[in-house]
Image (cartoon, rainbow, N blue to C red; front, side, top):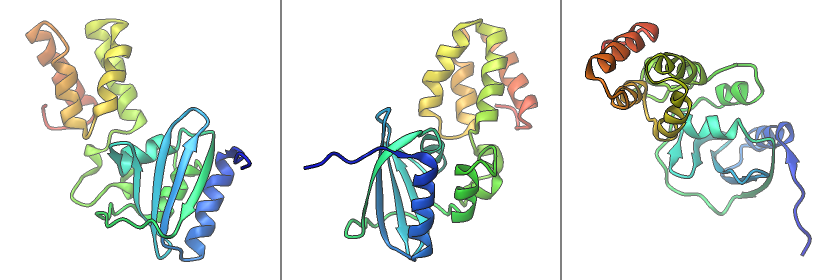
Length: 185
């Protein structure tokens, strides 16, 4: 059996766009050349769910956007009942094609606010501020916490817990809240 070829990411996005235009229902399975795996679930041409391992929605979209080349397979027989993630299909395409440089408010799941979204910009801000308190270890600490991040406030609290001195941890929390326009964490 012949091995499937790697498809460049722009062609993958175009393939998803064609499936949407055809109003297809099913699941697109992706495996990237750097071993990232993702699923894009479609329902009558709308993207209703994005998954990467145990991440869903915005977190999965961020992983999907990192793929350079992937092998893909669309299975219209594989339709799982999933909770709709309220991710506007056009906003997803805008993000994946670079029309939207970060995951912005239009892609926020219902019940969330823009301040809950852990974007690349939020991550960079948090890492820069944490570096003032723990030095170069901030990069390693942040990478570990970013993997598990579900929302900005929880992420900020978990990073503050990594600062050994309680007074410094409190200063970090205040600085993060101010920088990201959050109520104090």
